[in-house]
Length: 548
Image 1: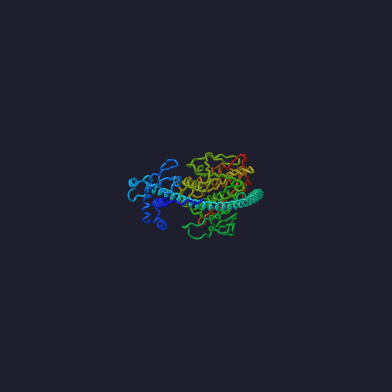
Image 2 (image 1 turned 90 degrees about the horizontal axis):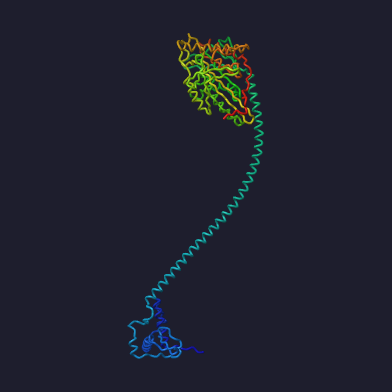
């Protein structure tokens, strides 16, 4: 079936339509299209007629409709007539469009179509921009997902490593737990052995102390003062434990501390005795001597310098240190401090506004009604209480001593100890006594109140010497009740159970040699006195006593 060739008028109309569409879309016609549509003289006239005929109604013989070539042309009309039917000239003239107009007035204007195309192009561009943004975001999300995946992989690896470490640590902990169990068992065994050895050591320690005599005596020759000139020729030292006067009479004691010995050296000789107090034994240390011989210096010290500290502050520090060591063996300690003054044969409490006390004597103990006991937990507590006691103690100036003690002072340290495992509890007392010095009225030049003080001091010291002499001779009756001093020291001198030591202080000056000699004679008598073996002071209700 052969194809039908369109007429020139139809071709011209099609070309015109294409040019109109190209103008609406903004695309310039190509050179080929321009050349193909370039009009000739004859062709131009024909095209004009054809253009006018585009808007003329054409009869549709098939269905009676009339249409134009600019609209929808029926294919049947095209096939029926190859040559268009031209209207009359008058009709063409009346229907000719305005100059420059080639588009049917019923077709949409180029402005609306251009705006619609522009809007569509903007939408396309927006969609393209959105698509590009989404593409970029997808790339970023993909990169982030890759990064998270890498992190997850790394964390998984780390988790595996941690699991391995935990397993290793668990194995080490299990091994360590087994080792701790074994060592704990060994430690318990060692602690039991240590407790047994500690009990043996305590017993041996106290046996050694007892072998040296229940009353041990040492001599302390104080250093010369700055205003005391000259060297001592009347006192000699044949050996380490001996002292002689005028190279005639010689005495031997546990220790003889010459002027060159320090406070530290003196305390080193008494600390093993003081240690017995922590073991549950009563201990007494008495400083005896004439006025101005250095008794208070020996017991309290001379200044704030630690090297000058005497027996009392050093004993406190020593007991605190040793108690800490014994705590590892299950011992617990409580310390109580009191300070008593015997002035004009009456007892007073130096730590309670100098209140007067009442003494009661039991068979083997001494009780002081009204005496305050201050709990101490650190050394600073003791220092504060010692300052209070020093401020309340009676002192005065005499010709023999510018700061002469006019009373006897008794520092009392109570130790309560308990070992929960064994149920043992003890209450022991350490007494550190600073006696007033003996003096003569002619040498000291005292009168009035000072003379009365001297009388009571000498009377109490004489009674002390008498009690020791009778105890030494094992007399049936010892007059401890004659003075308040001997009543307070009854348990230290044989009427109780105590480990006792006396430090006899002497003046190094030649003018005091006679008094120094008499002091050594009395010391020799004390050294020969037997007061019986000390007994550990266990509480009757040991299992119920608590030291907090």
